[in-house]
Image (cartoon, rainbow, N blue to C red; front, side, top):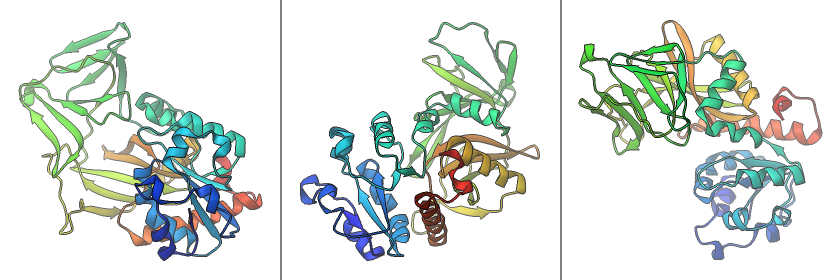
Length: 349
């Protein structure tokens, strides 16, 4: 299937849940001539969310979008996949990263998001290590694998210590796997103890407090980091290449666990101006992880900015201005890549 002439054709060409109801992308990809062919290689459920961005990208008429069928991604040899100039690909549950990497090595398309570093983004320990390597501040933390037979863990009522590094309560406990969003916060006896559990939003709830649960988990590897006071707000930063960043603030789930929504049911967020330092952090993260379309989280505390997560492919869900800006940047990036022009966007590829 192709998407070629703006929003109307984009809406008509997005994938159906019924694989038998749509023709093969290989069969139709050559019907619509275009200067640049953009392949979309993602799991089916992620395609719908790409609709506004793809519509903006193709509105100029100089790009054709070919959507790789999920069945083909999972079952066909990469040599049978469509040949494209530019590739949109990112990880979600069930996505065969190694196989997509094989395709990239075979066809050598320009990738907005480099495939290799995506495996690094699945491990919070690797993320923090890379951030520290590029000089980006992260919360003070320690790492401990409870199943790895490690030594050096000391646990007391009001602190945790690993190999001589002490993290006082309240501290945050994060699973090493970035795919596990069950994050716990443990409080000291001086404020009543207990713990709070953060999780993916369920309705209007994003966390719950357990006054009688103070025991840390011991079923795997975890990061333990100091809890940073942020005055109730988290910053979500979205980058498109190293020179474009858009930021929003949302109510922190560590407050009361209630999600604030607008009349349309969407979580309330407010645009935020980044400091010059934070803009430089955005540039460094984009290049270091090779992810041109990327999201990461900032905690502003103690007069400084700390990065506590890097997500990979993320974009603003409800801003038409953002989609227009992002599409313009990606179009320019793709043209420069195909023409072989020198570009600061290509440094990570």
